[in-house]
Length: 316
Ligand code: NDP
Ligand code: OXD
Image (cartoon, rainbow, N blue to C red; front, side):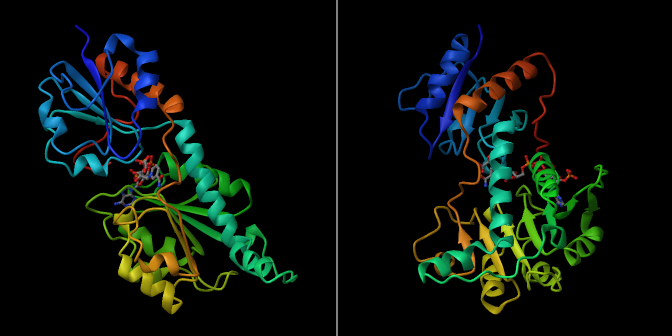
């Protein structure tokens, strides 16, 4: 008999997902992971921050489908057997939302949004000097699904875009750098750094003082700007704070933090040169994304590797 699809979510409302999956695949008898749920026939889980210990209670578990693009929350768990497949979300809706956020933040810094909002509060009419996009070097860390889309959209606005990835890449029209050996050259040509990396043992804490000091300081905006929508674990937050306070960084936009929700007492809330958004760069919409989960399960059952199949050793 077809195995059941469990919706293993905490922190989000699971009802919309249940409705959507029930409409799409009634034969998989979708269910929520509530108390008393019969988990004995569950073969697949559509998951986001699933409750601790859930996966070890599923004797027939074959695959976990992340409802987000990131899978670091799954890979750090100890209740997932080694042979269970993990698939991350790849979908144009999610990708489009992420690029919207990245482009919004780049444009807000580039078009001096904070300064104009401050002028408006003071009813002050003053036109600031505005460099052209073509004078600004944007660097994207992570040239995967999200990084490549953001790169194309930012380049279409006229920014001088380059990207950095783990392995070398050739992407038409894009300046690319790779690996530890390519990092310093990439940073030295970057005025606005957009971080779209996954959190892995290799990238944990990569955004530290040494990296901030490696960014270009001769750009038209008068100091480097960091924009991070990857994961909070990428940043050394003490270094980031100090760099924003002492001018090593001119400004930042941060969507993700090591502790989420960001505690009320965090100094990041009060930093005038740091925009904080609450892990809101791209929300996962059941109506848009449930179909991808269903397609990935179907591919796995045909013995194929879906596009988002995670290499558990590599960490993304
Ligand atoms: P992909 O797996 O498609 O791309 C990852 C990219 O990062 C690849 O280019 C990869 O290099 C590069 N990379 C990985 N490790 C390293 C390393 N050690 N050094 C240099 N480059 C590295 O991921 P996505 O683009 O789909 O997603 C990226 C991340 O965005 C997610 O993991 C998630 O954390 C975050 N995210 C955040 C959201 C939010 O709302 N804030 C929403 C969605 C995603 P290579 O190409 O060589 O493999
Ligand atoms: C994701 C996220 O990984 O929302 O999709 O952070």
